[in-house]
Length: 229
Picture 1 (cartoon, rainbow, N blue to C red):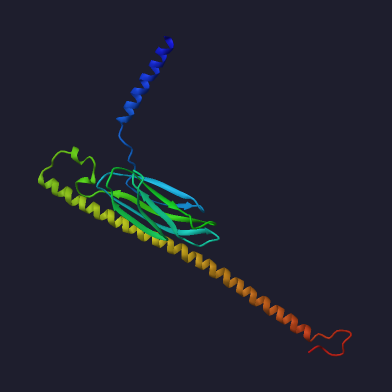
Picture 2 (picture 1 turned 120 degrees about the horizontal axis):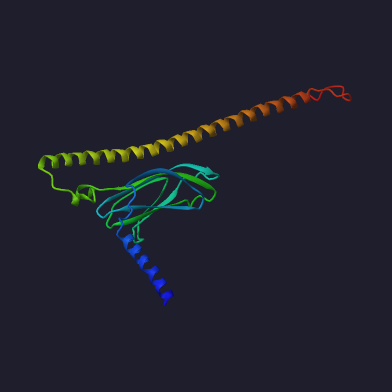
């Protein structure tokens, strides 16, 4: 009997705790992300982004640098719905995937470095979700009605905010291209310097060897009465 009472005392608080945890708001996270990540050969990196229904999901990537023997910069990028269905796939050095979200939940983004077996790649990512119109803020319905003047000001401010956001997206895309071009120029500069040094060394070495063999042709040994040439 005492054991049953102890079990009941343990079960009741756990049920209360689980019920209280269901009332807590869902963790949404940030709506915009931009960062660089290194993916090793044959590995897959996945990320999850929360989005409400009737939003606009954007995703862009670019392979900036390769580390290793291979210089293939192609990777595979996929996006899945919260239910696990494939939305779109991109296999290139750089790419974009944009779509309207049809359901609320966490969307999965995966990057696969499956074509490089001996090289790691550095990938710059820029993804997130934005809302336009009444769906721009999920707490919009909880606000009080404003007068016409404030509504007009709010509408103008929202349009300016959307325009600034899209400008920020284009700036990030341009920054991805700039960093990739910088790494490419740096790699070509290093390659040209090393190749020029190797060719210069080969020219100097061939000149020294030619001079050495020509000198031997005019050298008179103790047994010969005249030189070879």
